[in-house]
Length: 366
Ligand code: AOF
Ligand code: ZN
Image (tube, rainbow, N blue to C red; front, top):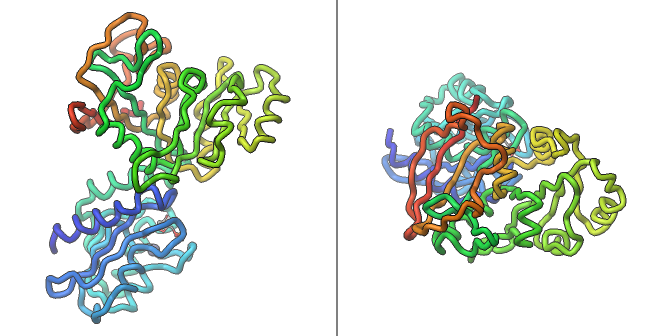
């Protein structure tokens, strides 16, 4: 058994990022006598599974070979027939699996069938990497709610804009390019109405190679204050826009106008006159939205943390000091009354983008 081959299968899987949601990224390599004889990965939603892509690309007899696959092969009839059948028929002798499939339709049954048919199976090969790669899929398939990444770009002293709301640009090109990759990888991007009013953003992907692969735009706008001229309302050819609002202000007429323009409006129950974010996440899940990149301002970010909907954070920190008690910060609202009440972040690691540092971590669930 060779870890190197699983590493390769994981890199292959990653090529599907942003194209396969809400399905998992999966990579597969077939090895015989130490040589790679086939490769495949899940390329687009609804397309062939990675195992089938690899089997279809074979030019040599796979009998006696070992398959390295990043996710447990499926055993259900979904959009495609079960992969375990194809593996068994191929005569492959051994299957090394990155992680078991959290999909309740599979969840260990794939391994069981393979073993019953005499295929040797090893599980949890580079399991940590395999599950990190599919953190979105794992959350979504097991809860029905999207995985939420809070992204924020700030100065060294923790400001995301000056007192005049100037924020272009705090972080460097390399950091911003990575954020556009995230916009490609995530199915949706969420901001609060204040961000729309201040910046009038398009919220599209602008990196070479990924243009046009835009996330669905979600605007949290409890009082339906969005201007009909806002870019996210007018420029629907770029991406869908969903406005999450409440009926607090009797906005029926405005909602109708927005819908006539092609905007999707979700009228949700309110909590303290604000959109109930837990219900919003459930509704987004029902719309097959598996992931939300939260680029909210401080108010929305605080509410999101308070409602426990944030799974992960990416804080980009630039080597600049803005200062000022009126400058904006990433998380505002009421804040924790005591340090003991702070939201905790687990497994923090750092990345470097040009001169910036990015801190990544997972929000502890309480
Ligand atoms: C994928 N790609 O390479 C593998 C998957 O909707 P279907 O029929 O394509 O089935 C999706 C399920 O199949 C998915 O939730 C996962 O459990 C399993 N494996 N899915 O999209 C793949 N190997
Ligand atoms: Zn399959």
